[in-house]
Image (cartoon, rainbow, N blue to C red; front, side, top):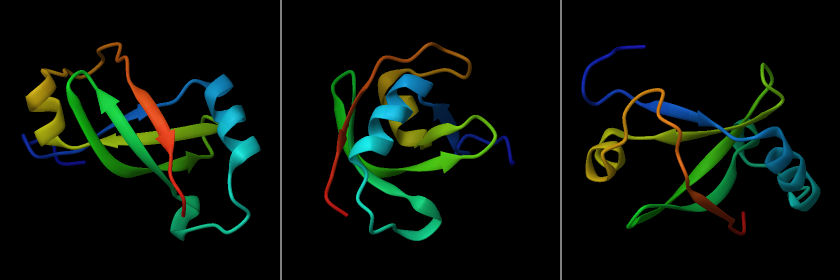
Length: 88
């Protein structure tokens, strides 16, 4: 992946949370198994999708540069956020 300032970073959700999400997931799946979510980090909310990750058995949440910059998020930082599942 290109390492410039606009590159994406990804957060792996805890496996316990992934198991809960799988329980409530709609049987109608979007491309790549994506699940629409509303995310809140600090003072910032946005809508995006999380994606299943076979390697970890969890989901990954993409964090674009604008969000990381606005909230001062650095690579390898422990991140506190809320996630709300949305209708597909």
